[in-house]
Image 1 (cartoon, rainbow, N blue to C red):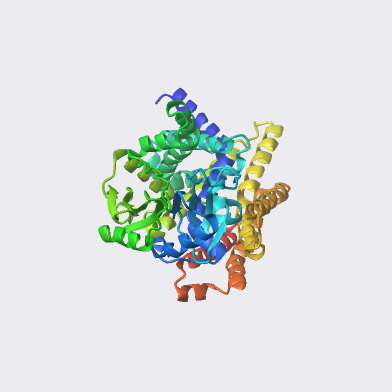
Image 2: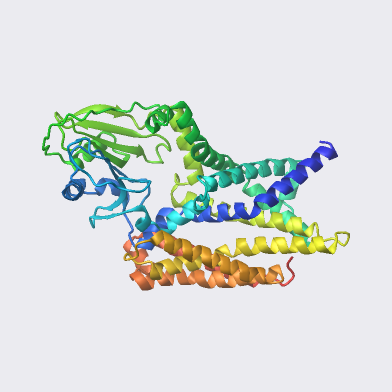
Length: 524
C-alpha cells in the first residue's frame, strides 16, 4: 500500500471515529445494559417469572375476564410474549359486526395494551414503560424521533460510520496487527499507552464490533428507514402484503359469518395439544379469529428452544366448529428469508445462549466503550504538540473534555436513575415514561455540565468512578429496602432475574473501586 493511500485511510478512519465517538459510546453503553432488558423490567416491577411462562397462563380465565369488559364478539384477539416478563402484549381489533357501536380509541397503537393475567390488570404503553424499555430505545435513539424517524436514521448512520471505522482500522493495522496485540507498554508515553490499549482491545472485540455494525445497520436502516417507503410504493401501503412477502408465509383469511356461537373452548387445552405435537416448542403467541362467531379459529404459535434452533416459528390453527387443525407451520423447517432474518436478530440481541452469552456480550460491549474513548484520547495526545497553535490545542482539549463528561457521566447517571425509579416510580404513577425521561436526561445534563467545568480529565474520571461506584452499591440496597427481596433472599427463592441485576450493579461498583485504586494523577 502506498503512503498516500495509507494516509487517506488513516485520516478517514480518524475522522469517522471522531464524528461518531460520543454517539457510538451512548449506543454501546445503553446497548450493553439492554442485554438485561427483561431482567431489569422484572427487577423494577419485582415480578420474576418462571421458564416457559406463557404456557402456564390461564387464558380461559383471562379471555373470559376480558370479554366481560371489552365485549369481544366478532373481534380478533392476539396475545404475544415477545419479552420474558409477566405482562404480555395484547391486541383487540375493531368489531367486524357493523351493527355494534364502539368507542373510538386514540393513539398510534389503537387496540394494543399490556395485560397482567394474574392481576387482571390492563396498562397502556405509557403506564407500562420501564427502565429496560428506556435503555433499549435509547440504544437506537428512539427518543430523538422529533422529525418522523430522525432518531432511527441517526443511529443507522452511526452504525454505517462505525462499520467504515472498523474496516479502515483493520486496514491500517493489518501488517502489524498480530505483533501489536501482544505489546503493551504501561510506562511509555500516553499516546503509546492509549494506542496499545486501543489496538489490543479493538482486536479482541473486532468480530463482535463488525457483527454489531452490520446487524445494527440492517435492523435500523433496513427495517425502520427503508421498509416504510418500500411498503408504500411496492405494496400500496399494505403491511400484511409486505409481511407475507418477507416471511414467505400464507396469510390465512377467516371471513366473519355473523352467526353467534358460544363455543365451549379451552385455550389452555389447545396450547397443551400444540405442545404435545412439538414438546420442546416455546409457545409465545395465541391468536383468536372471529371471537364468538361460527367461523371462529384459534392459532397457537411458538419457536424452538435456542439449544435446538435459533430460528424458525411454527403454529397450529384450530377450527372450533369441528376442532380440526386447518393450518400448520413446522417450526423446525425454516425458509431462507426467515432464517436469515432470525439469525441477524439473534446475533444482535445475544439472547440465544443464556446468561453466559449475555455476560460475554456485556463485557465486549463495555470493552468497545473503552476502545472508543481510547481512540479519542489518541487523537487528542497526537495533537498536543508545540508546533500546534495554542488556540487549537485549547479547542481540542475542550472538545475531548466534553466527550469525556458526556460519556463518563452516563455511569453515575444510569445508577442514579435506577435508584430514583425504584424509590419513586410506584405503580400509582400514571406517566412512567415522562418520569424516567426527565429523571435521566435532566440528571445527565446537569452532571455533564458540572464535569465539563473540571479542568482536567483525571478529575472527570475520578468523580465518575467515585459517584458511580457508590451509587452502584446503593441500587441493590434500594431494591431490597422497597421490596424485601435482598440479594440473599432472591438467591434462596430462585429469583434469577432479580439476582442478575443486583449482582450486575455490585460487580460494577467493585470494578469502579478497583480502577479508582489503580488510578494515578498522571492522566491525559
